[in-house]
Picture (cartoon, rainbow, N blue to C red):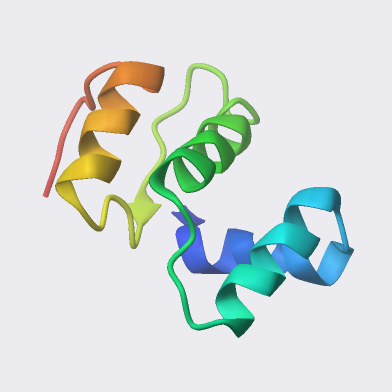
Length: 79
């Protein structure tokens, strides 16, 4: 189970370069870019090679879905 919001908050808490960038975006009340969120999802999904993963809160937009298919391939199942 991967939660998009939880992953973003973890990056902020860990004070990673991405976390600092995301924190500024969220503090301005803006949405984190689709490319950033999709790249983060892809990176986390690599931690589960050969396993199915439930994505929570993602994709939130058609742009997210397109970016995901482009970077990761089509999902096995979408609810």
